[in-house]
Image 1 (cartoon, rainbow, N blue to C red):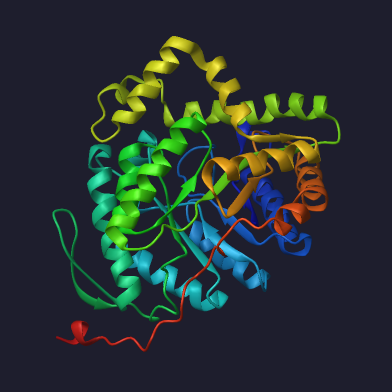
Image 2 (cartoon, helix red, strand yellow; image 1 turned 120 degrees about the vertical axis):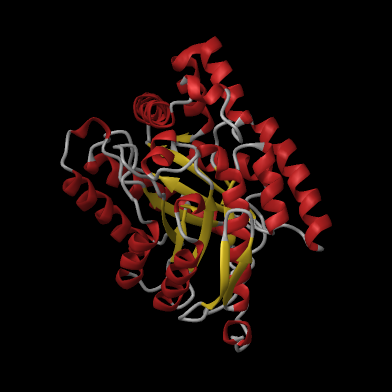
Length: 375
């Protein structure tokens, strides 16, 4: 199994300066390759303490220069907040800088504060994601960006530097709602799974996604990548206490950032699935939701953590697991200890486990022609 780590740059409670948070998270990212992790990831968010990585490709470019072998994953680039042409250029440039080490993760976003900050109508996000995603993925294969849609119109223009190799087999997208999973199948991309709903729902949606992917693309879908908030301790009791404190604390920041309980979610066009979450929060309350989320994540003794990751594999057939080790105001020393213990006592056994296909099946591209751009 491929095993990665993600740096998320949370500044919960603002106990530290943003600069200190960056120093701490970069120190964890610097530990990844020496400890034997297969990849480094980060997430894109804006305007709040929730996570403070507004440009995930910039962060990955920095890490590309500080590493030699680890893959570099975006979890995710939120397409509706970007010009697709610029995303294509940035992604192609990072792939060249890193020798083809990028894993491209895409998403459409769900934070009202972020759509408002970018002066965008959140209700357009699904249509924007589909058009931008189609344009970007075609462009990265052909070397030319060209699209004529409702929202996005791009005359034929060459991507320079030209794409280094194909992104087929190493492009994934986050899909929380069943509708999004169907969109990803149509786009021909794999799934990023963030545990946040009952596994029986995830399994049902994966079955539908895999069937549709095969029908539309003539091949099996890439195995999913699963991420999880992770805490390891030699004591099962201590691990659970810390999980409830910090993983539970993380989910409080989710509720604050996304405003899932807010009135706007009840009738938000394109977010019908989230309206159901709104209703559940009204019935069960925040505390029940926090406990439910924490129990979906990966915490416990090394043996328990290993078993939980394999349980996720049985439920999703994922070929990769990406752990988040620092979150919700956890002391840096505790986060580093958490990550080191996982790396020494859990990761070697996970990497021995045959989880299926390699995460990156991308082939080198033939020489790209830019005839369309020249016409």
